[in-house]
Every structure is written in structure tokens, then in C-alpha cells.
Amino acid sequence: MGAKPNGQAYTSAAMKQFQFKDKYKLFLMAFPFLVLVFLFSYLPLYGWIYAFFDYRPGIPLSQTEFVGLQWFTSLVLNPYQMEEVLRVLRNTFAISALGILTSVLPVIFAIFLMEIKNTSFKKIVQTLTTLPNFISWVLVYSFAFMLFSVDNGLLNNLLMSMGLIEQPLNILASDNHTWLSMTLWGVWKGLGWGAILYIAAITGIDPELYEAARVDGANRFKLMWHVTVPGIIPTFFVLLILGIANFINNGFEQYFVFSNAMNMSNIEVLDLYVYNVGVVNNNFGFATAISILKSIVSLVLLFAANSLSKLVRGEGVI
Amino acid sequence: MWKNTRITIFDVINYTLFALFTLACFFPFYYLFINTISSNDLSSRGLVMFYPQEIHFNNYIQVFKIPGLGTATLVSFGRTLIGTVLTVAASGFLGYLFSKPKMWGRKFWYRFLITTMYFNAGIIPWFLIMLKLGLVNNFLAYVVPGIVSPFFIILVKTFVESTPISLQESAQLEGAGDLTIFWKIVMPLITPILATIAIFSAIGQWNSFQDTLFLVTDSNLFTLQFILYRYFNGATSLATMMQSGAGATENLANIQTATSIRTTVSMVVVIPILLVYPFFQRFFVKGIMIGAVKG
Picture 1 (cartoon, helix red, strand yellow):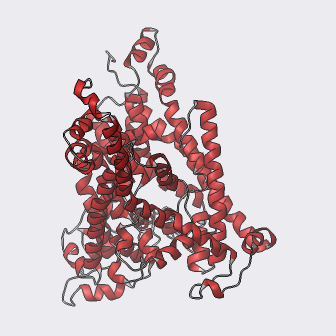
Picture 2 (cartoon, helix red, strand yellow):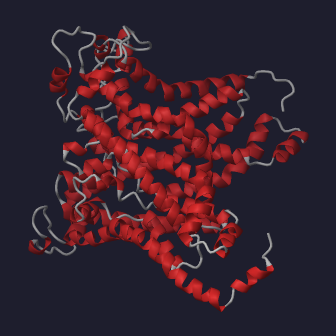
Picture 3 (cartoon, chains in turn red, purple):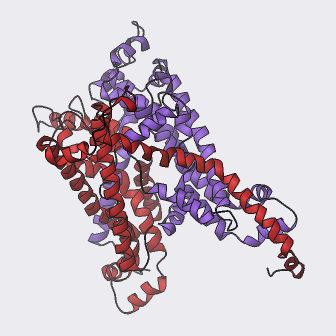
């Protein structure tokens, strides 16, 4: 559709005048929404000043003591606090590292699913494995409780009826393999969904590449390795970089719902720790100080990951 | 294309592994469901394992007699409906506005918006601001903070930019204003992406749990997810609810137990998702692809 000759006449001075007023009108229409963004995303940054006070809920900030960098220095100077934070960081890093290791699983899932020629089987697999992604962690915990609870959970009842164990195993309130079980629940919930992106990427590979490789005598596994894998590596790389950028943000909800007195020392990741310090123990100052440090480290990681992406792929991820 | 479709060992292993994982994904849903429709007595002793026994549907009637559960259902449906409508409308409108190069300070304001995806102040500062804004123990806290969602706005903006601009231009020449163009021209074009956003927003609202945990102590504002969490956490005494839920003359199979309440409420939480799932399944591949383009 080319521009009509008389359409040109509108790009005159009158039109410019019209557009001049228009640009403010467009801004004004967006303004109320930008206020919301300010209120809910930028205004809380003002609350960072609580990290410099000995604030307790209920007492106005003006009547609380200014403590300067005390909450930050106590991280290093107070051996107990330092030990706590190191433990929390160890949990955070371990669970994130396991998350990054298991991020190859959706790739494998997608590649092998494409080898399944029975369309209806494939469809059932895709539908049912994607479903867990859409339920809440609370519900996942409900499943975990029904299946693994010490109190008439399915697994315990099965093992006991088969005579394999005498006493029920308290799997959920146990300190063993917490990192691994958290990772496995993450895999259970996210694997099918995570594979969708790769399945789409595989579908996008030029069929002529497969044809050519086949003519050259490549068998099924060679096709997978030499055509499919290179075709989805770029997608994997982007997601890997995003995973690195989110290394210290492993979330809150999953660890919160699965946590209990028995497993807390191994399940307490940064977000859960901030909650326990701030909301449970009412230490607002220290919790805010940790949040500030966490935000700074996340931003550094994000920019590092972005630079890495620019270096390797020639374009950023943000 | 494999001319000789012979079944190799690889195929056998491949099919088996996929079948096992699919079963693992689906079985918990099935297991909870058969427990809700089986004899409560057998179920609470863990004897309902692979198939329902002494089928009855009484639990689904009894469960709504638990004090607070009806309200929680209304709150959950209310926030899902209102929250989704607001988010979809705002995402569509803002995505359209930000697609207009002539908007004053467009680049700056777009960055102002998108940057919020990459930082957050932390829970304590956020809580104190929500308290100052009067959003503690307030239904609005469920729907207002989610109205402007950067990710959804990126999706719409990208989508609007992919539609032919000549349609908007010709409407402008006819004398249509920006709002008319949005409503009459752009909206019908972007319906697919709005549908995708509606699905993700609705699922997010329905599954949301943290906002209740942090901001709500008023039990009239509890959501189903939050109540379900409390049933497992032992914060509420299920015993008192059991007494109020069942008469003394009822037989053992029908009397509410901790297990029957937990499983039935879980099913109440999951059934709406199962009901809409077949319809939205076709949307999300499209949605995730558009999202992936932008990273």
C-alpha cells in the first residue's frame, strides 16, 4: 500500500502542529499508569533508609536510632551473623547450581520427544507434562504431603505393606538431600514447560538440513547430534545466561512452603532468609540491608551476563 | 522419513521414559482426586492408593460448609476476574501508547517501565510502602499492583509494531483520534496476544499466595491458596472444622477428616485450572515464542 498523493499534503506545517499537541496527549494517557509504576516499584526504594536505622515496627522512624552502616558491618564483624549468612549463601548457590545443571533436561526432553513418531502419544505427553507448571507451589506441597507424608503418605504405606520398612520415613521433615529434593520438585514442575521453547526451536530448523544430512548417510543419532543440537544451542545459551543472571534469585514460595523446623538450615535461601529475619523476627534493619546487598549483586550479575552475551552472540539479553 | 518403521531398542526406552515421566506428572492429580471421592475413613488411613473405593461426592458439598471457605472462593474468583480484566486492559492500552514514536519522552518512560523488571527493593521496604498506601488488609492490594506489568506491555508493543501501520494512518486521515484508533483498529488486531496475556494473568492471580501472606491478616480476605497452605501448615485446627462439618449420625465414610478436607480443598483449587487448560494450551506456545524473541 503506497502513500496516496494527497496523503502527502498532511505532512505539512498544520500536521506538525497537530502532532506537537498529540505527543503530550499520548504521554498524559500513559501518565496514570506510570504513577502506579512509581508507587509500586520505585517508591519502595525509599524504604532502603530503614537499613541505616534500628527500626522496630510501631515506632516512628524519627524516634529510632540512626545506626549508620551497623547492619552492613555486622555481617562481617559478628561471627554468628556471618556464619548464618554463609550458610544461606551456600544453600542459595547450591540450589541455583543444581538448577543450572538440570537446565539441560528440557533440551534432552525436547530432542527425544521429537523422535516419538506417534502423534497422539506425543500430544498426551506434552499436555500432561506441561500441566504442573500451572499450579501453585502450595498445591505442589499438597501433592508432596499426600504422597510422602510420614502420616499415611502413599509411599510410606506402600513400602510398609511390602514389608520393606518397619517405621514410616519422614521424608518431608528431614534434613537429608534437601537441595536435591528441591531441585527435583523444580524439575517435576518445570520440565515439560521448559521443553516447549526447544520444541518450537526444533520445529523451526530447516528440513533441508535433515534431508542433506540423510543423503550424506547420517543415521538418527547423527541427525540429532549434528543437526538438531546445533539448531537449538542458541536458545539454550540465552536461557543459560538468564539463569546466571538470576543466580541469587531462586525465589521464595517453593522454599517457604516446603520449609519446616527440621530442614530450615538447608532450605533457607536468600529470599526466605530475608523473610525470616524481617517478617518473623522483626529485624527490619538487617533484613533491608540484606535486600540492598542482594539487589546490588543481582544487578552486577545481570550486567555481567549481558556483557557475556554480547561478547559471544553479538547481542544482549536485556 | 523412516521407510522401515522398525522398532529399535532406543524407541522402547524412549517411549518408556516418556510414559513414566508423564505418569509422574499426572499421578498426583489423579491420586488426590480418587481420595476425595472415596470413603473418608479408608482415605484417612491411606488405604486408597490406585483406584477409588466406596465412591461418594459428599466431600465437595461438605467442604463449602467449612467457615471461611466460601468467602475465600469468592475472593479468589474476584481477584482473578478483576485483576485479569485490569491487567489485560492496561497492557493493551500501554503497549499501544508505547508503540507510538511521537509520544513525549517515549524512550525514557519505556526504560522507566522496563527497568522495574530487573530490580526490587526487598520485602520489608515494599511492605512498609504498601502499609503507607493503605494496601494492607485491602482487596485492592490483590489487583492494583499487577495492573502495569512490563513483560506483558513488551508483548503487546512488539505485537502492535508487527501490524501494518497503514491501517492506523488511514484511520488518522479519516479524523480518528488516538483512543478511537486504539479501540476500533488496534484492539481487534491484537486480540490473540491479549488472550495470551489474559491466560497468564488469570493463572498468576489464581495461584497467587505471597501477597496474602505478606499483606493480609483479615480472614475475610484470605484466598483459597492461602487457606490451603494453612491446612497443611497446621496453623488452623482442622478438628474444629470437622466437627462443624459433619453431624453425629453420619457414617464413618462421610465424616470429614483432615485428609478429606486437605484433598478436597486441593481439588477445588486445581479444578478451575484443569477446566480452562485445554482451551489455553494452544495459546501459550504462541505467547512464549513472542516472549522469547524479546528475551
